Amino acid sequence: MKRPVRVLVAKVGLDGHDRGAKVIATALRDAGMEVIYTGLRQTPEMVVNTALQEDVDAIGISILSGAHNTIFPKIISLLKEKGLDDVLLTGGGI
Image (cartoon, rainbow, N blue to C red; front, side, top):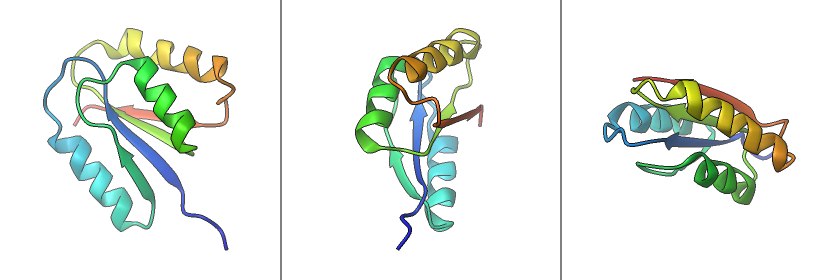
């Protein structure tokens, strides 16, 4: 039996507004995916380490500040460093 897609949803940085991330996590879960929600104020290192530990297929980052210009390259670099090149990374600001 095929396992469901595993998605990590994270709020990176100091942004404290998590309603949108929780809505996305719920929608993904309702669509049959297995969702790991990390909560607020995660660092890129925390996100990638959780992705590795949880063996996720995708990472969804919710961020409203302009910090995405530095956070996404850092996450991509860490994913490559940990051999997680096949993990889909997506993001949005809701």
